[in-house]
Length: 68
Length: 149
Image (tube, rainbow over all chains, first blue to last red; front, side, top):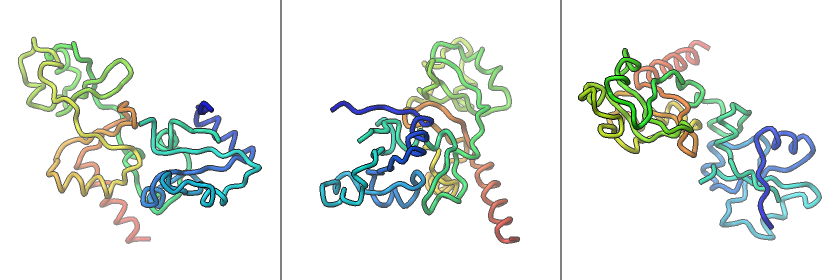
């Protein structure tokens, strides 16, 4: 499935509607800074058991550092 | 699953709220000045020099503002007929806006950088510059304010 690309304002709108934020960066980077309310599951540990922390009934917005 | 492709750098570039142990510190994106002179690859040094008067830095950018190179005092003093591309220092070191002032200063001290550091987006678009002197002064002021509080 192709990824959907959203702007900052669209992300804020989705969060207001109940979306969850998933930060897939490493733990150190997450501890340094992250978007408010984000859950951290580093990409290399993202699997069914770790993803169980997420609410399956709400959209998940996943992000990393930048376009790179 | 929705992929927020621009990522957290894009969020911070728009001064959106942040969390984390560095959230309350001063980030260089908060204090970098955006008034730095810029030029294109094809501009002649003689033309750039006037625009950069009073500066020891001019940033060479493309039409999207992406950093391509840097002109320091030595390059700004070069033959006025040469182009920026001919004398620039290509691919200068840049920093993302969520680097803390403390982290930037450590890097500047470790690498003995006395001049301006460039702050860019993850794609390399210029956001501003911060001088070592300004970074030192801002941090000293912040530390003094915390000490007084």
